Length: 192
Image (tube, rainbow, N blue to C red; front, side, top):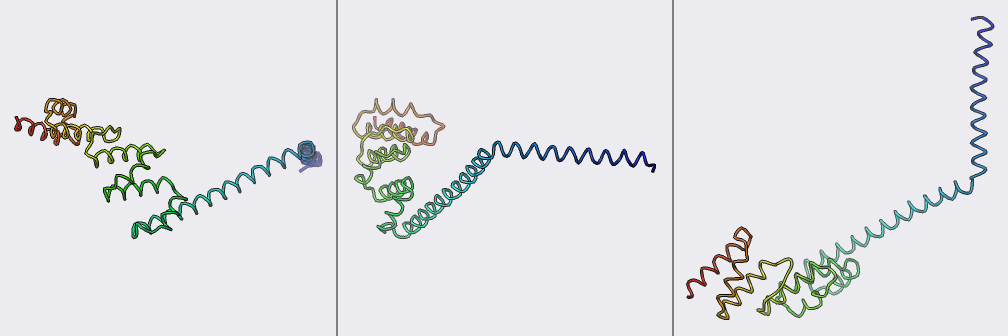
Protein backbone atom coordinates (compact mmCIF):
# COMPACT_ATOMS: atom_id res chain seq x y z
CA UNK A 1 0.00 0.00 0.00
CA UNK A 2 1.40 3.34 -0.97
CA UNK A 3 1.50 6.47 1.10
CA UNK A 4 -1.13 8.22 -0.99
CA UNK A 5 -3.53 5.29 -0.54
CA UNK A 6 -2.90 5.36 3.20
CA UNK A 7 -3.59 9.07 3.32
CA UNK A 8 -6.81 8.58 1.30
CA UNK A 9 -7.98 5.85 3.61
CA UNK A 10 -7.19 7.97 6.70
CA UNK A 11 -9.19 10.86 5.18
CA UNK A 12 -12.17 8.55 4.64
CA UNK A 13 -11.99 7.33 8.25
CA UNK A 14 -11.70 10.89 9.55
CA UNK A 15 -14.63 12.02 7.40
CA UNK A 16 -16.84 9.17 8.68
CA UNK A 17 -15.81 9.98 12.27
CA UNK A 18 -16.54 13.61 11.54
CA UNK A 19 -20.02 12.69 10.31
CA UNK A 20 -20.67 10.70 13.49
CA UNK A 21 -19.62 13.70 15.60
CA UNK A 22 -21.83 16.04 13.55
CA UNK A 23 -24.78 13.66 14.01
CA UNK A 24 -24.10 13.48 17.74
CA UNK A 25 -24.02 17.28 18.00
CA UNK A 26 -27.29 17.54 16.04
CA UNK A 27 -28.88 14.94 18.30
CA UNK A 28 -27.64 16.82 21.36
CA UNK A 29 -29.12 20.07 20.05
CA UNK A 30 -32.48 18.37 19.41
CA UNK A 31 -32.40 16.81 22.88
CA UNK A 32 -31.64 20.14 24.56
CA UNK A 33 -34.35 21.89 22.56
CA UNK A 34 -37.06 19.25 23.23
CA UNK A 35 -35.83 17.81 26.54
CA UNK A 36 -39.01 18.61 28.47
CA UNK A 37 -41.27 17.20 25.77
CA UNK A 38 -39.21 14.00 25.45
CA UNK A 39 -39.21 13.41 29.21
CA UNK A 40 -42.90 14.27 29.43
CA UNK A 41 -43.76 11.72 26.75
CA UNK A 42 -41.59 9.07 28.41
CA UNK A 43 -43.17 9.71 31.83
CA UNK A 44 -46.67 9.70 30.30
CA UNK A 45 -45.99 6.35 28.61
CA UNK A 46 -44.57 4.93 31.83
CA UNK A 47 -47.59 6.11 33.85
CA UNK A 48 -49.96 4.71 31.19
CA UNK A 49 -48.40 1.24 31.19
CA UNK A 50 -48.09 1.06 34.98
CA UNK A 51 -51.67 2.31 35.43
CA UNK A 52 -52.92 -0.19 32.87
CA UNK A 53 -51.12 -3.03 34.69
CA UNK A 54 -52.58 -1.94 38.05
CA UNK A 55 -56.13 -1.71 36.63
CA UNK A 56 -55.79 -5.15 35.02
CA UNK A 57 -54.52 -6.62 38.30
CA UNK A 58 -57.44 -5.08 40.21
CA UNK A 59 -59.96 -6.39 37.66
CA UNK A 60 -58.38 -9.83 37.84
CA UNK A 61 -58.59 -9.82 41.65
CA UNK A 62 -62.27 -8.79 41.52
CA UNK A 63 -63.00 -11.50 38.98
CA UNK A 64 -61.21 -14.07 41.12
CA UNK A 65 -63.21 -12.96 44.17
CA UNK A 66 -66.48 -13.28 42.22
CA UNK A 67 -65.52 -16.74 40.96
CA UNK A 68 -64.72 -17.94 44.47
CA UNK A 69 -68.05 -16.61 45.76
CA UNK A 70 -69.86 -18.29 42.87
CA UNK A 71 -68.19 -21.62 43.65
CA UNK A 72 -69.28 -21.30 47.28
CA UNK A 73 -72.83 -20.58 46.12
CA UNK A 74 -72.81 -23.69 43.95
CA UNK A 75 -72.34 -25.73 47.12
CA UNK A 76 -74.49 -23.59 49.43
CA UNK A 77 -76.92 -21.24 47.59
CA UNK A 78 -78.06 -19.66 50.85
CA UNK A 79 -74.62 -18.33 51.92
CA UNK A 80 -75.36 -14.63 52.55
CA UNK A 81 -71.71 -13.55 52.60
CA UNK A 82 -70.98 -15.20 49.25
CA UNK A 83 -74.15 -13.66 47.80
CA UNK A 84 -73.05 -10.19 48.89
CA UNK A 85 -69.53 -10.68 47.53
CA UNK A 86 -70.95 -11.87 44.19
CA UNK A 87 -73.40 -8.96 44.08
CA UNK A 88 -70.62 -6.42 44.74
CA UNK A 89 -67.95 -7.89 42.49
CA UNK A 90 -69.99 -9.15 39.52
CA UNK A 91 -73.61 -7.90 39.43
CA UNK A 92 -74.41 -9.63 36.14
CA UNK A 93 -73.34 -13.03 37.43
CA UNK A 94 -75.30 -12.32 40.61
CA UNK A 95 -78.45 -11.64 38.57
CA UNK A 96 -77.91 -14.78 36.53
CA UNK A 97 -77.46 -16.84 39.70
CA UNK A 98 -80.56 -15.26 41.25
CA UNK A 99 -82.54 -16.02 38.09
CA UNK A 100 -81.44 -19.66 38.13
CA UNK A 101 -82.36 -20.01 41.80
CA UNK A 102 -85.77 -18.36 41.28
CA UNK A 103 -86.56 -20.68 38.37
CA UNK A 104 -85.37 -23.69 40.34
CA UNK A 105 -87.68 -22.76 43.24
CA UNK A 106 -90.56 -21.54 40.98
CA UNK A 107 -90.41 -18.24 42.88
CA UNK A 108 -92.27 -15.63 40.82
CA UNK A 109 -91.67 -12.94 43.48
CA UNK A 110 -87.89 -13.28 43.13
CA UNK A 111 -88.25 -12.72 39.37
CA UNK A 112 -89.93 -9.32 39.79
CA UNK A 113 -86.74 -7.31 40.47
CA UNK A 114 -84.86 -9.33 37.84
CA UNK A 115 -87.43 -8.36 35.21
CA UNK A 116 -86.25 -4.75 35.68
CA UNK A 117 -82.60 -5.67 35.05
CA UNK A 118 -80.42 -3.62 32.71
CA UNK A 119 -79.29 -6.91 31.17
CA UNK A 120 -81.85 -7.52 28.42
CA UNK A 121 -81.43 -11.31 28.46
CA UNK A 122 -82.10 -11.59 32.18
CA UNK A 123 -84.97 -9.08 32.06
CA UNK A 124 -86.69 -10.83 29.14
CA UNK A 125 -86.18 -14.30 30.59
CA UNK A 126 -87.48 -13.19 33.99
CA UNK A 127 -90.62 -11.64 32.50
CA UNK A 128 -91.27 -14.78 30.45
CA UNK A 129 -90.81 -17.21 33.33
CA UNK A 130 -92.87 -14.99 35.62
CA UNK A 131 -95.81 -15.11 33.18
CA UNK A 132 -95.43 -18.87 32.66
CA UNK A 133 -95.51 -19.48 36.42
CA UNK A 134 -98.69 -17.40 36.62
CA UNK A 135 -100.24 -19.36 33.67
CA UNK A 136 -100.57 -16.19 31.59
CA UNK A 137 -99.66 -15.38 28.00
CA UNK A 138 -96.20 -13.91 27.68
CA UNK A 139 -94.38 -11.81 25.12
CA UNK A 140 -90.71 -12.59 24.80
CA UNK A 141 -87.95 -11.79 22.38
CA UNK A 142 -85.81 -14.74 23.42
CA UNK A 143 -88.61 -17.28 23.84
CA UNK A 144 -90.86 -16.02 21.07
CA UNK A 145 -92.04 -19.41 19.80
CA UNK A 146 -92.34 -20.81 23.31
CA UNK A 147 -94.50 -17.81 24.23
CA UNK A 148 -96.73 -18.44 21.20
CA UNK A 149 -96.97 -22.12 22.15
CA UNK A 150 -97.88 -21.18 25.74
CA UNK A 151 -100.48 -18.71 24.50
CA UNK A 152 -102.00 -21.34 22.17
CA UNK A 153 -102.12 -23.85 25.01
CA UNK A 154 -103.92 -21.34 27.23
CA UNK A 155 -106.36 -20.61 24.40
CA UNK A 156 -107.09 -24.34 24.05
CA UNK A 157 -107.71 -24.57 27.80
CA UNK A 158 -110.08 -21.61 27.52
CA UNK A 159 -111.91 -23.30 24.61
CA UNK A 160 -110.84 -20.82 21.92
CA UNK A 161 -109.58 -23.33 19.35
CA UNK A 162 -109.71 -20.84 16.47
CA UNK A 163 -107.24 -18.49 18.13
CA UNK A 164 -105.08 -21.45 19.20
CA UNK A 165 -104.94 -22.77 15.61
CA UNK A 166 -103.95 -19.32 14.31
CA UNK A 167 -101.15 -19.05 16.83
CA UNK A 168 -99.90 -22.59 16.24
CA UNK A 169 -99.79 -22.04 12.47
CA UNK A 170 -97.42 -19.11 13.00
CA UNK A 171 -94.79 -21.51 14.37
CA UNK A 172 -92.43 -22.92 11.74
CA UNK A 173 -92.52 -26.73 11.58
CA UNK A 174 -88.71 -26.84 11.42
CA UNK A 175 -88.26 -24.89 14.65
CA UNK A 176 -87.35 -26.54 17.93
CA UNK A 177 -90.95 -26.31 19.14
CA UNK A 178 -92.49 -27.27 15.79
CA UNK A 179 -93.19 -30.81 16.95
CA UNK A 180 -95.05 -29.56 20.02
CA UNK A 181 -97.04 -27.15 17.84
CA UNK A 182 -98.04 -30.05 15.59
CA UNK A 183 -99.08 -32.13 18.59
CA UNK A 184 -101.24 -29.28 19.89
CA UNK A 185 -102.81 -28.84 16.42
CA UNK A 186 -103.72 -32.53 16.41
CA UNK A 187 -105.14 -32.26 19.91
CA UNK A 188 -107.42 -29.47 18.65
CA UNK A 189 -108.68 -31.75 15.87
CA UNK A 190 -109.42 -34.52 18.37
CA UNK A 191 -111.23 -32.10 20.68
CA UNK A 192 -113.75 -31.17 18.00
